[in-house]
Length: 588
Image 1 (cartoon, rainbow, N blue to C red):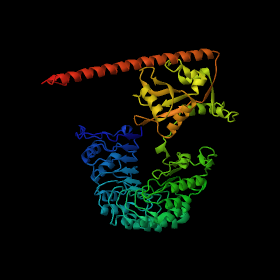
Image 2 (tube, rainbow, N blue to C red; image 1 turned 180 degrees about the vertical axis):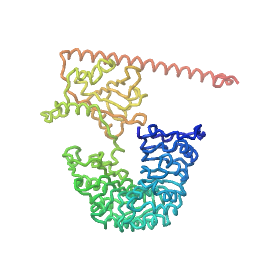
Image 3 (cartoon, helix red, strand yellow; image 1 turned 60 degrees about the vertical axis):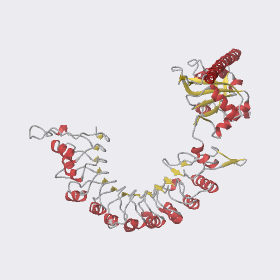
Image 4 (cartoon, rainbow, N blue to C red; image 1 turned 30 degrees about the horizontal axis):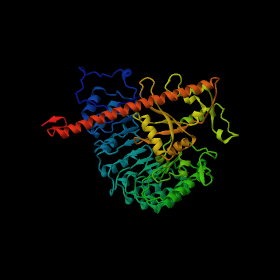
């Protein structure tokens, strides 16, 4: 085992047992650990525990290259020399490349590392999110970020660096700085605080990833920074820029467009949760190139504070469709989904337009893994029984794409044996026998996702009162082992128009039971009839009559129970009126 992750595991503060002899307990190299990655985040460690481990087990982690100490608040920078003793690198370069010290107290960290440059010579990634460091101490990390062997990845999320010279000292001369990935999320940065970063980029800072989310940056600071990247032209190294959750408005939309068009390595651009208007969003989306000629794979424009009306949203979605190569076909003014050849997009392509609107026809047509819209808020993705039957039929090549009769288009064809296997017969004998009869099956709908407490009467009443359907029978399916409702039901309608009303009821998003949405699916299926067609009709008729009689008996029993309860209540009420001393069954 080379990776050990015991994050969030409590470690007691009990004193470790000291070896009885002064000999090296790990003199045999065969018992030293092979760990290359060790995660001990949020494990209640302290300086004393680490020191005791180092004294008892020196050199026990000679192969360690990644260490995560995040969340151990009692650990300070004073524990670093003991960590080096554990790694066995007190007097030579260790193999440690990644060190995470989030939420620790690291006041003297820069001086300790600088004092042991040989020991820390291979360190490339340092995570200091929410650590207890002053801006002056952050600035002193600049000595660790010089080429050619300095830090490459530095995370300072949550450190308040506004109105300080920390970033200026950290980055220094851009061409000499070794940082390629810098994260400054939630650092309360303002426009003026970005000046050192902009200057470093202009001077040649080879930064690939820059995260500035959750700050106070406006158009001025963001525009100047992006202009510096644009000015680098083909030499611009930027691959990821995160400016989400700031105060960016319409002032830098043109600059964003230039950055998308000119940065040759730009992979991710995150501008969500700002205040870009519909016009600015259109300007940004218009700069999209064909996906085979650009490196951009993630463009996040979600949840802007500025109002985007419905017509603007339709224009934005149509523009995205055009840029990505979708053809929006219309029939009688209605956009049709899945009628045009789908373009081949690179893996990982995501254009996030959620939180802006766009739940109409264009949003429905585009909503996918590549284009995220608000359509799923109105209509959740669903796969019905009919879809599964059609997919299966296409896969085995039996569903014809040409139909002589429109009523038969899209129908699947199964044998009686196959249809019984789909239904689960004969394992579940409670299934309605009319599913074997074509004229009944054409008037059946299949319901899934129902609440476990739904009753046949409740479901029938909901379909008749809310969807205006004429229901002939409702069969609630039960698990054939525990005999409890499994969320599935078959409903037989009295006529074909009721089937269409039920489907419209579902597609309008009104199919709710106890505030829980459920799916209604029609069954368009052609079953190759067996020799016993008359027997199926007879059995279906007999079963329908038997279930109707059973339902009538249960209704009669229920009405009798209600009548007896009402009669008993009336008698108690009359007795209470005649006997004032009687109240709620008690004599006062």
